[in-house]
Image 1 (tube, rainbow, N blue to C red):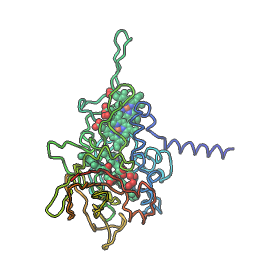
Image 2 (cartoon, rainbow, N blue to C red; image 1 turned 30 degrees about the vertical axis):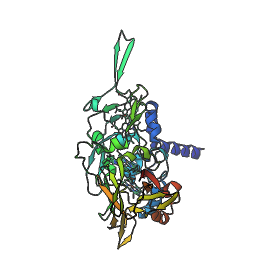
Image 3 (spheres, rainbow, N blue to C red; image 1 turned 180 degrees about the horizontal axis):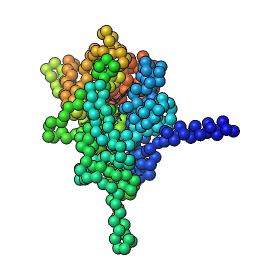
Image 4 (cartoon, rainbow, N blue to C red; image 1 turned 90 degrees about the vertical axis):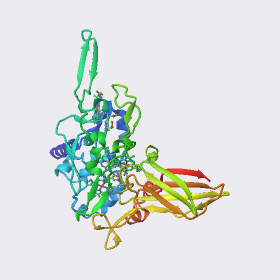
Length: 380
Ligand code: HEC
Ligand code: HEC
Ligand code: HEC
Ligand code: HEC
Ligand code: HEC
């Protein structure tokens, strides 16, 4: 009996340690909560992301269960972060590895060469957010009674304070503790977004305005705000419609054929994650037949001694044809076009380069299929 009681107690205490935080937010922010479930931030752990798992399974630190990826992939598993526990399957890993609070409590970003670091506020129930009309304000919950208490007007959230003065929530700086760059143990850059500051006046886009655009639906139950910032950030669940407009495809005829231009309006290198394979496909539809032209890859291959290698082994760059921030890349084709032709241009990516997928034994369909980000048909 004592034994049963003891193990019950253990079970309860482990569950307590890994108590989800997001459930509280759900009550008042149901739309954002629901959207978040499909985001990669809700699935960034080895238990939810088969690609992250496949790479972790080959990582030398796995033998010692020394999960060094937690700072960015599962910052909300607080016991794991503090070293109190090792990586294990629990509620946080399953449902909110990067919780609402993990983002909304980021006070500042400390810049480092190897990886940047998120500095979180220590204040309880204190969240940062952005609203240009309230910029600079700090809002605590207030109830105003009038008509002898018969009418009540409230402002702020009854559950938490809101701080609108954190610049990182306006310029996208809060994303860069995790997303800017990552070097391996050898000081070699495994992933670098090579972010460019927007200096043109007509392009004011930030990480937040592009990836979390305002869409229909109130952000809170207690008042109708009509719109909310999209929280379903992912390229895995193929919501390409929100982002495709930032990549412009165009075609120009040349003397001996034509050229296709790809304009990247994002302020970062496209598909910098070293597993990705970005590809341009061009087909010509002519008299009921389809002529497929050679596919063009945009890729960064990292390696050692001239051969491709895993990120923790790599010490050099073997190839880099990725499209940089604000770059327009032009690709030449020497196939002459004829009147009546339709040229179909497709620009997209594989989540995992098929060659690497084989090495990692990844067979998941979504991971191995070609995802079209944007497509254009040009009649000649
Ligand atoms: C500095 C923060 C940081 C650390 C530390 C980190 N990662 Fe990541 N990782 C990211 C970010 C951000 C992305 C998303 C990048 C993108 O999509 O461009 C990512 C994406 C990935 C992906 C691609 C996932 C997919 O579904 O396509 C893999 C695989 C991965 N990380 C493996 C690891 C492993 C293994 C470790 C630990 C040994 C690790 N990462 C440590 C930030 C980090
Ligand atoms: C009891 C209801 C309630 C709960 C629970 C709650 N919120 Fe809120 N929250 C509100 C209200 C109401 C507002 C709007 C306040 C205003 O506009 O004056 C708000 C506003 C916010 C904002 C700022 C919105 C803006 O204007 O930019 C953020 C961020 C936020 N909540 C995050 C959270 C997170 C994260 C959780 C869970 C840990 C949470 N909230 C739980 C009621 C709640
Ligand atoms: C606490 C660290 C952290 C913060 C803060 C963060 N991210 Fe992420 N993000 C990640 C990790 C880790 C992944 C990769 C998850 C995976 O694929 O396993 C990711 C994935 C993504 C992806 C999708 C890539 C994919 O593989 O589908 C996008 C887009 C993205 N983040 C954008 C943002 C933006 C924009 C912000 C700021 C508003 C932000 N992130 C803030 C850690 C973070
Ligand atoms: C002008 C719009 C725009 C801006 C600004 C922008 N992005 Fe992107 N981002 C895109 C597009 C387009 C893609 C490619 C389509 C996709 O992956 O869904 C992309 C892809 C990504 C990915 C996925 C890459 C991958 O291979 O997994 C991440 C992560 C990301 N952006 C993070 C950021 C961060 C962090 C910032 C701020 C520094 C930012 N983005 C700013 C448009 C933008
Ligand atoms: C990847 C980081 C990240 C995560 C995770 C995240 N948020 Fe946000 N959230 C932001 C940013 C950045 C903004 C500011 C967007 C803006 O208004 O420009 C924001 C805005 C909001 C707002 C105000 C909405 C609006 O339209 O201005 C609310 C409310 C909110 N978040 C609640 C939540 C809740 C609840 C969760 C968890 C289910 C959550 N957030 C998870 C980054 C995040």
